Image (cartoon, rainbow, N blue to C red; front, top):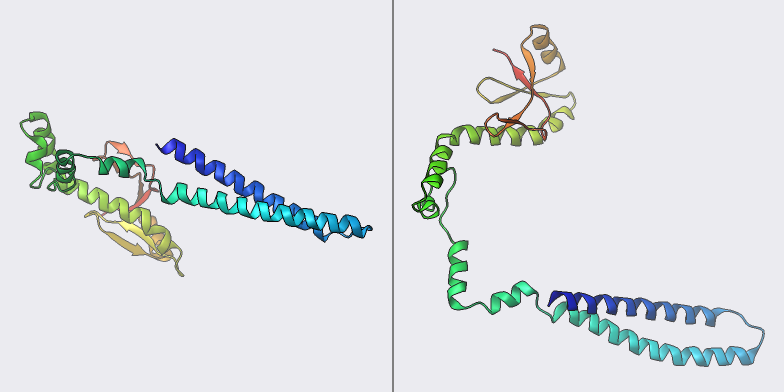
Amino acid sequence: MKKPSRIVFIISLIQLYNTSTSLALCSNSQNRKTSSSTSTSTSTSNCSSRNAFLKKHLLTSATAAAGTLLMRPSLSNAAAIEKTDGEAAAATSILRSDKCAFGEGDGCSTLAGDNEFIQELQRRSREKKETAQKEYLSAYQMKNYPDFFASLSPPKYMVRKGDGTFELFDDAQLAELKKANRIKLEKPTAMGGKVQDYTQKPILVLID
């Protein structure tokens, strides 16, 4: 159903382009100065007739293009209209399913059912919830804030402390920490440290 609609729309656009081009060419020819008044009169008459025809054709093409966009429903909408009551109820239940995040929530038992493997995955998610949340928060901060603070005058630099929080230092403070060997570069990781996160820059870490 979608493919014919697109074909009709493309054809209508081509017709619009050809019609507009013809109108422009005819208009330009009328503006040219000719030496013969008879030929000028004949050209003007021909262009007037042609303009009337083309303008009518232009209106028809525009109407067809608009109808293709506005009057034809998309396949997804049509499919939704034709759904039976049972299918609609099932779709609604999926959209309104209870929450299940990090293995916690009213929807977890429904999702897992009697599947022991899914139940085990949910249990692992609950155990790693705190670690995962800290990882997500750190990734968010490192992707959004370092460049902003570095653009200040004077620039500031984010340094992560042992508890996972960050502290800002200026150039002089950072230089002193580096001299004291209290700053190291750490490559950010994801999935609990299993893989390196290349979407983040190396992190400045404060050594206690």
